[in-house]
Image (tube, rainbow, N blue to C red; front, side, top):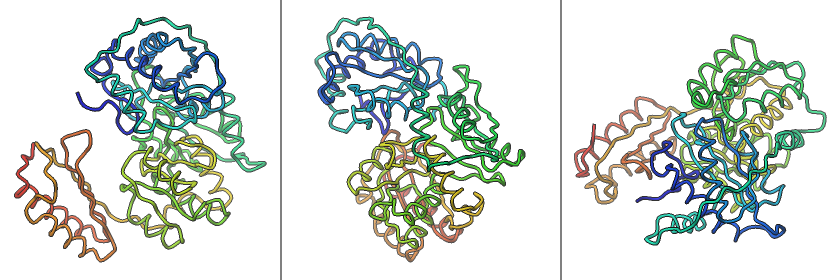
Length: 454
């Protein structure tokens, strides 16, 4: 069996391995053995907070997890349907041992996932995940008697809303603004409209009718077309789409043009720098951020720490470099001044605060930096030979990178979870980067020895 933990918890199709009832119980029990050892002192009996998104499978997964946690004599606090970042905030505030979120984030309804937060509200470190995997996948089976721990229901949504509002400037208001929200039929379907209305906005909402089977279906941060079109038709100041667990968000400007995480960084990084809030004048981004953004930030005197895809990698780089802003083009943005992990609602509010103070429409920011054309390709392959072992490939790659003359880049890698080769080429000329991508893929097909699967 392969690794259980991906870039954001354990994820899969519900009721297929590892999301079988017995294995979910084992996950709960393994967490009860490993995670309390890293807790802050203060509880006689270990406490875990557990929340979920709106997927139909969430209730049963919670039941099986709690049976595993019960074997470890845990007190389980049930937060109900709640955004993932709210659990991150509440774990630390409530001095719990750890938190669990049952969610597959932006994935379609047939998927689900289990995410963990440490007592500090952070995603688990690699060594701690490895300890859990050793228990779950080791030769020696976990032996325990599942126990039905009592669930203590607590509604902390108003506390979380109060925290979000506390991050805004004194007297901040959205009064007079029309804002269209797409809640992805997910965890933010109640809380997001309430916050924006409390702040004075006129709000129109789509994706706020979860039925357990429609989360992220034709809506949300991965499907922003409907939101963007509706925002423009209504004459909104902007549109905002959250994903299923509301840890990311995407915007549309007043003209209905979509804005992603790179646009959010382009708007907020110079704003924070000008106000002395961008520590070390730097941000953390993944390798998938647009090269045009890197050039724009460079021109603004802002350095970039680039890391592999995954919010945990972004967070690690932010902590290492003492950075207060980082994110992914997917809309997963971290305002570390206020929270240790990505939060779609926090991102939406902080971006609005910046835009309103600067007195510009969203479309101005979209035009204010030049997005480089991109070619994204993937090949399904039978094996993953080292690129250095593919005859002439490294030399060709070096030559083609040189031909871009510092005005573009080539990023090639194998997927960590699928039998795929991924290629990204960026540059000023679409025809040039198309030619580079075709030349590299042709060389790889001819010389790698890997079978390309159609």
